[in-house]
Image (tube, rainbow, N blue to C red; front, side, top):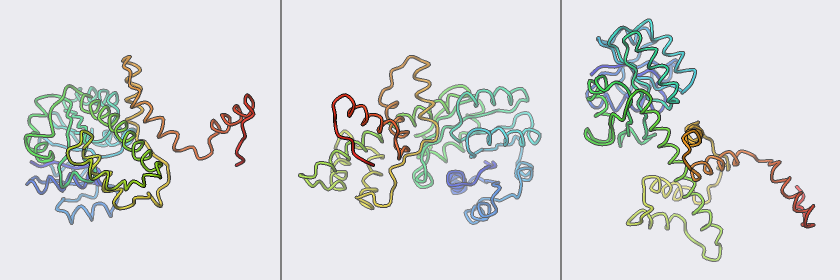
Length: 301
């Protein structure tokens, strides 16, 4: 097939290259000159602007967006809208909020343009290993793009699927990332306890390798953890600051709206927020309270 990839960052460029390797023609656009030059070296046909990239496509056109969630997606769609026609398809492979996706899908549907949301997981390993694709939108439009999804997935038969109507793909990806928060937090806490048991002098890298084989806690995430421990067992040079890109917050908000108890995911998110406070007023106040009611010593900062 032939399509345009808009956004040639780490994810977009890797996905475009995987498609090229699979025999598809990918026309790429990115506002950065360097990104376009690097993409060309990887077999992607670069275009200096969005208009040229879309105009070069056969009809019905397929445009895949790999741009930051939020206003950037809306701005890109606004630029694309006059360039597209009835029967064309726009795919959003980023981590958009599913409510935004439903709104965009309804707006484009009025012009006969299909809007497919494709929750995409795989990170920097996706080029070699393939991507997990959770796809929402019109079933007929998804079926027509089967060759594209089958190429991006780990195998043509596994790791991808149509999961529901508009917004379902991004909703599924949001929950996927919420689960990821909880898993990461559990691994991090477990290894922290092991590290603090100094009398045992555990080799955390060795333990991670043992758990990777036969254990009920084995996973690809543990594989990556083992690799990180092998490279830097003391985590030297890494600040204890953990960012979040929004999906965990949205997951917790949905859990509240749906009256679903999700304490693990919620606490994992709160731990990330806590990691960013290097001068915690709350902790200072807790120390002051202990001093007030029990005369407990306060450590001077």
